[in-house]
Length: 599
Image: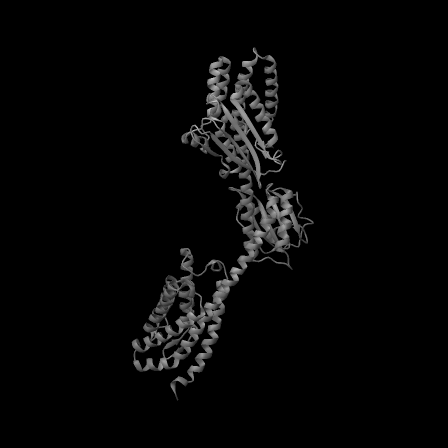
């Protein structure tokens, strides 16, 4: 009888095929369990994951030995299937590590036999070769054809080592004749199918993760507007309804502190919003801060007879280091929860916690910005008041009637300027401030000050920050045209460009050098100290000359620089002013303001 057609050969084919199926099913099932479910192919993985893969695939190699048939004091086995898959999936380290475990077991422990050395060397070589192929050709890492080829080459090499190293040679030849064909074919096909099974498992995991990500983003997109007001009963109710509609779980609840803020779905007849938390599991999560997945009524801890809730996922909502409340997904007998829902709930809780914290930070930043703007306004208001009073004072004896008109202009100006109840005013109101200022200054300096205001149609009702344009006009007057003996012209123009208002203040006065321009545009206004205001007030009453000096000093510290600082605080660095100026050639200041709705 031809040895190749020995009765051992068909028996080996049947036995190895059956046991290969069991190994493949077990390996596929284990790879779906956490934490292996989170481990993917490639080199970027933590050390614990690499060690876990080495041990797992090494155990597969050992099982491949024990699931084989004992033939001629040796084993027809399925080790190659496990170690080749280890190398392709995990790379050289995992392939070599799994090969060492499986080969070491084959050579040293229990199974022995005259072919132990060549079998162990072949197993180690197959793991290392597969790992090197995965490292050199990462696109072929989970390719079934590559696994099949490595299986054919590796087991052929295995048979060659047995013929070379095993003694006695006659028994080695007989062994190879019996086991070579089943082992080469079954191990090669097994590696190919194992790799393909892992590829499918990763594909399904990616599909699941992408579906879960889309679900989280959909919920976040719908609930974002509600959570901007914080975690309240109204926002919790709206958010819970959105989650219930998107996830199709039995019930959803949100708690804040020890209070149920919302509960929708099954059990809503006794899990009532506005009442204290009923379940012990929720209290446990609120105390420990650890997510919890409970799968029976007793663990939920609801004392209501007939409560339909059978399992629950409870995850904490955080604000900084504080537990703010809990997000809860509930299942029933007909609609149970699963691990995917657990991961979904943890992702949502992290997202909601971040959103709540960001909103609080945003509110704080807005309050800080508004406080800073009020401080800047407080500096600017006395500045214009000092200049105006100084001008009126010069007319009190020589032209009392004109002084009276100027006082009325000043009164109208200050009445609007002292109203800080609104965060924005119409452009037309700001231009009234500008005109009041120009009337006072033209009364003082006569024809040396000429003004041209060009307001494009449709821009009068545009909302802008108060007291933003007037300091720039004042800057052009006092440091531009008044620096020239003959005076000059200050031009103010405003027109709309899409969703932005473009404002330009320019003069044909003295201009400025680069150092002055850079100082005005510097983003740090920390040197604008409010202590100069009371000092200037004290000096104003002390003497007229000293008052003029302090007003000028105050003006140098604020004015255009504060306007630029306010623009950046309110709208961001991209809205900073632009200044074009050269000494002796005048100055042009321009900026833009986004469209706002009147509140």
